[in-house]
Amino acid sequence: MGRATVWELARLGYRVRLLDSDARAAGNVARTYGGGRATVAAVASAEPEALAAALRGAAAVINCAPHAMNLAAMQAALRARCHYLDLGGLFHTTRKQLRLHDAFREASLLAVLGMGSAPGVANVLARAGADGLRRVRAIRVYNGGADFTRYRAPVAFGFAPGTLLDELTLPPMVFTGGRFRAAAPLSGAEEIEFDLGVQKVHLSLHSEVATLPLTYRDKGIRECSFKIAYDPVLIERLTLLADLGLTDPRPGPRGVAPRDVLLDCFRRLPPPPAFIDDRDSLAVIVEGEDGRGPVIVRYDVTARPQRRPPLSAVARHTGFPPALVADMILDGRIRARGVLPPERCVPVKPLLDAMEARGMPVRVTVRRPVSS
Image 1 (spheres, rainbow, N blue to C red):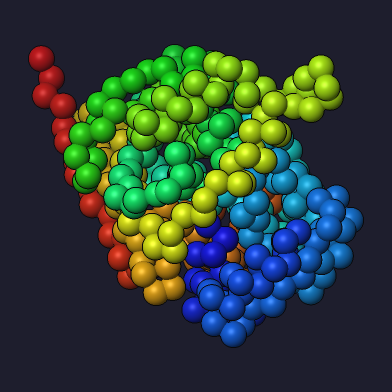
Image 2 (image 1 turned 90 degrees about the vertical axis):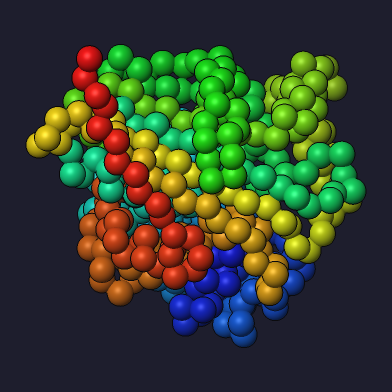
């Protein structure tokens, strides 16, 4: 995701500083995706003080690290007095981050929480549907995909393995009957038609559900959920590892957490090919009422990969939006301040126009239920 963000920022004309604990890997990204505008700074500590020192002079920080870094990165942004964006906090971290709203507003800074594809583009599409309605009954977000790449490894990850393990094993949060509740992992299966065809989706822990019910509570929202179509083979293999206790984050008898050992083993897998031939689809459905009565508005968007420089569909779909929104903040098109989710501060048309210009057009369908 960070590669796509670096590439897009460089194309927009910004100087980019890559912060990473692995300076060598970051240097490779800077050379391949930075367009001569990227430099690297090695960061040996995830503490806010160390991060803030590395951020000095930056206008904005886009946090593409796993969500466990979010709170420290936000504190660093406050100390360095720069705007902040990230890719999501898997519900619970996002709710903690929202508590920093007053601190960011007092510093005249904006933090946009979850500005990737889902969360991110999905939230903006929800806004596109909800803004025209006088009442919102439900917002449902679906994520589908396909990968035609031939991998040498027994498992392959489109994003951080630790995040994927959390999405598969932690109870997903849903908003139902006007209340938040936890559901069983991988429950709520249903079949959804995407641009890629029909896929089976399951509930997953995600950040959209943390904010959309709060944003649209005044419009009477009662239901909100996020479901994703994971590769069935990947689910089967990772579920087996979970059943064996290998995803447990608690230290075992020897003082080592099985999850840490598993993640270390994942790092030893054969690297993926440079070009990932995947697709990434979003479907956002908003149900409610407008001046003519009940209405269902659906938005669909599908991303595809690029070869030069190589970026997967998931990386483009997730890594481009935070760069585009950072550009809107820095040039004054977004003037909001505080800690906000995308649906409360990102203008719909400019973002969707920019996504369409990058090969990700949005398709809208409107359906009016026939009353019995």
